[in-house]
Length: 178
View: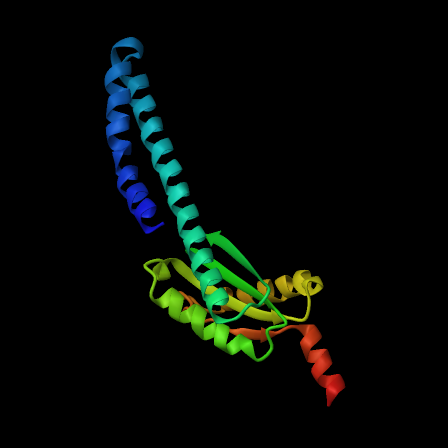
């Protein structure tokens, strides 16, 4: 995966060559102005295409790293959500009934990501333990609210922190048990 990422990173710079070729072969047929426009369009289109693929590979690699860390630590059912923002990538890990294993999984994920070249692309990492799959929608709303408060409240890039958050259902269960 790292090799594919590096190849795409190098290939995106060939957009200028593609634009020059487009300009060269269209200038006699369409005139200089249209040839320049076509060359610029080819350059920008190829750059954006390669950048989109590069971002997809980064997200895929982060998700694979998280999945490997979870599988190496414990056989826990989980969902991984990768969101792409302009400032970076938001990685979310939803563990289902991890309980005591959540802290161990958190450390394993942090260690795996710290050893990856893709760490610099992660803007925020959120991790939560849910009671069941049915809690996914409410947990996503909770994490969205938390993320919004975190991003609006600070001007700096948030630190890479894997946090274990209790869902509303876990807090209700804790109150009932006491």
